[in-house]
Amino acid sequence: MLRPVHCTALLALFLLAACGPDASIEDQVKERIASMEAAGENGARADFMAHVATGFGAQQGQMTRDDFRRFMFLQMNQRRRIQAQLFPITVTVESANLVEARFKALVTGGGSGWLPAEGQLFNITTQWSFEGGEWMLWQADWEPIGP
Image 1 (cartoon, helix red, strand yellow):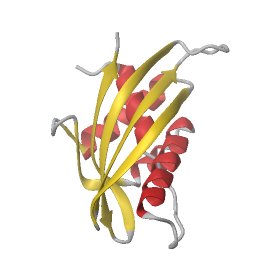
Image 2 (cartoon, one colour):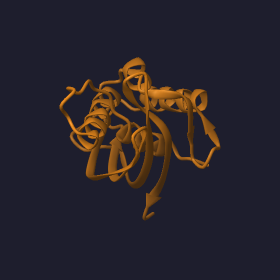
Image 3 (cartoon, rainbow, N blue to C red):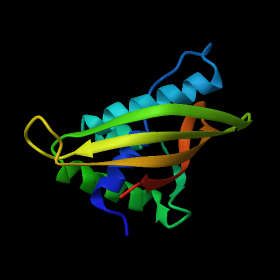
Image 4 (cartoon, rainbow, N blue to C red):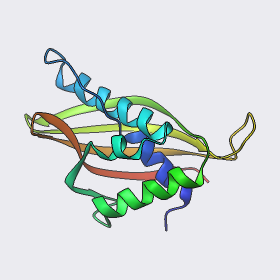
C-alpha cells in the first residue's frame, strides 16, 4: 500500500509546460516534468493532470489515470506544502513517439513551520508518448529509497 507521501513523489515526477519547436525531445520532456512539478507544488490539480495521457497507468498497471487523479487530489488536500527536488533527470528516446525519463525525487510535505513534517526519497521511472503535438505522461512507477 502506498503511503500518502508516495503520491507526493508522483507529483514531483510529472510537470507541465509548453516548449518551443526548436527544443530537443529531451528538453521538451524535462520542461514538461518541471512544469508538472510546479503545478503540483502550487496545488494546481487541473494543470498537473492536463499532461497525463488518457491511457495512463502507474505502479506496474495497478493504477489508472482516474486512480492517479484521486490519489494526487488526496495528497494535495492533505498537505499544506508539497515540495520536490528532482535530480538528475535522464531522458532516453525510445522512438519518435516514446521517451523514458528516470530520476530521483526528494519529496517533502506537511508542516506549518520552517521544516516539513515528512519526507521521502524516491526512484521514479516515467514513459512519455507524443500525442496531439505534446508529450504526455503515459506510464509512471516509483519506489521509496530507504526507510
